[in-house]
Length: 404
Image 1 (cartoon, one colour):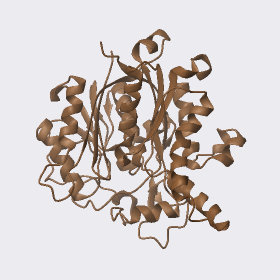
Image 2 (cartoon, one colour):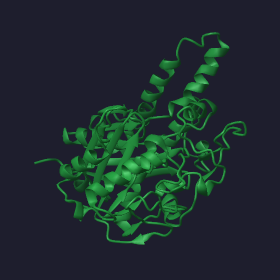
Image 3 (cartoon, helix red, strand yellow):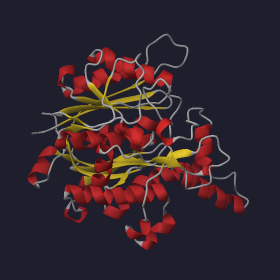
Image 4 (tube, helix red, strand yellow):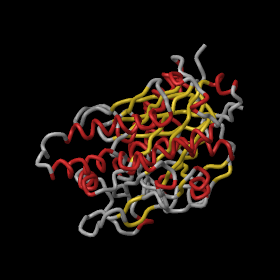
């Protein structure tokens, strides 16, 4: 019999809310977290908007000894992990250290750390030595700091598949739990709002250059013209369902199905892989399309990417066959942190019987989607599908459902 893997804790740091309850209240209220960059002066850059996590003071949450060793994204991840463990009612000191692990994702979070390291190296005349070493060390330290802080000596890893990485990390956590580990900290918190990271993102040509926050990131809108980057994400506590029941944990829901594909390289006459990823996830969960109550879309925010996703959803579910929402219109795209944040929203939707809205969108009529617009929609949500795509052709889909 296949082990059921459930989520028992959530820790959220998002541009429109710090902490799970703040984020969820803000999201249901349509609160926008996108604004002009404040972490550096963006005046001379063509893109000047981002979703920044507000009110985060690391000194209020972390020991002073950790601050010199960490950058903003690692601090956010450590605090989100603390919140998630508390939400799960899981004290690492009470659990076997080799029966707990950490599997997270990262896409852009190494830029700020790498920028600081290169500045230090440059001042020593060694700027050519360790750029790649800096990034490699960052990817390890982001999960390693969580492991060390909480005494977790079980499976560990960091998945790097850009925006799809958050779902891929949760899927890897599910695999490790099915192999026998009782508890895995997973999900992702990402951040790259620093000059070096900004230049790297601008080089893709996909950032929105509009200065009006409510009209800058418009997935599935006729005026879609790029995305607004953001920082933050969500950490999830995943557990073996039986172990969670034994310790009396509250369960948000089950990680029921997962599928991942890679798009063909440009110029190949084959369809994109997102539709297939959805089908694999549904089959893995053993659910039919009629069982899915909502789709949390990836929301690329550019016409080509939006069309691919809209066609994949309508091909699988039929035209306007399922409610679709993009709550990241309030936060921007959080790279590997975006999909875990959508997972958190999906579990909260199931808990509260409500689908969060997609804000500030005037839907393109070419896309046959039933978008949940402007206001939350009351609905019984028992099964949700979360989609994520990453630069380089990564596609991931995850089905989550209630256990009641």
